[in-house]
Image: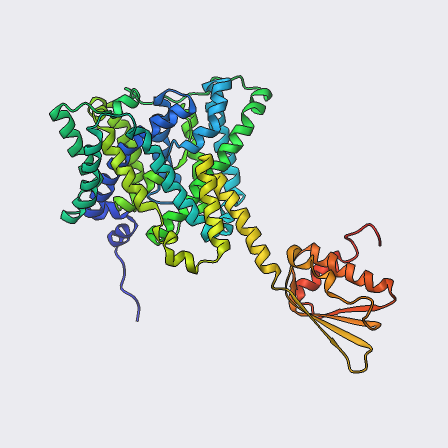
Length: 501
């Protein structure tokens, strides 16, 4: 029986994004974009200060990054903008050579990211262990919280009740209705209170001057010479790697929260395109922002590209059109939102006593090292790299002990059979040489590898060394039971790993 025909109108409806056909989704995405835009303003200004550039450079970057990545990115609802990690990398270049070189480095970093994305760098994410991911998330929550502390020190006493009120609204308002994001309600209520009552507290306007016009595209003001390339290339490569690391880790986190998959290769290339666009508009570049992404995805419930696009669009509208109003928003309102983001981002289950009692010590150590490195350096990429390397060392040490050797001598005493079990690689094979009785064994030695697998050249070299030791005593060695990949590797490398042939 043939299936019923599908009309062109029904096919068109199937291709339309959810936010075009569902008013509820539209409302969620629009309000989420507005909340994120409000939260982006002080962050972008702060990161501009870190990079040593005018605040509008960071705001322009956040606008172009968000709008561009909404179109070309591989992870829906993820927010990309100017970030502290990128600011830390390119700040020294701006201080030493000026804004023109910084902008040129941003464009080159985008080119590097496109190349790395096309080469499949996103596939390396599969080697990031869960313990590193948990450490990454927890460290991020700590960093976001630490970034709020300056807004709570040496401030008027009215900031603290405002902060408490903002936290209460953010927690309690969803129990009344979830139609409007609680962070937006908190920001509006606290702004109306402070303006109406004339309460003097730090505001967004105190962070820096908001731009009054849209960015204009242009070329970086640098000499196009090989010397310029040698100056900016190291900074551009560092920015490309840090930006990709942070973006791909954030994308993986959003995948877990939304229970959907993202295209990491497209995201890598998209980050490069967004940075190139940002550079040509005079921005300081950026990458995925996990704090604002959590506001968008976890707090506000956004799931589509519309929220990402509107976050960037609203950012410019708020700055250019509603600058005076936005400048009156108390920083306490935005700090309250970010504190709740910290609380929701931190994986509290990972530090529960019951979890720590059951978790292997090595896993806990990897998580703690990841957190410590990120908090100490302020660089998420450093923590992920150090944590991943530590996890590999812990894994190698654990697996190294799984290789075992048992010896059985034939009744006639002429042959001894060594049965080797486990995975043979650089860590486990190093101890293998000492497991044989070279002087006491009979003239014929059989090494049975039926229950083993050879993974690397170190293991092949170890077998060659064992044969050589027996050979110097006039004894013969037969290696049996090799599976096809192990036999192929040994066939190609045996006898070729030392100078003696």
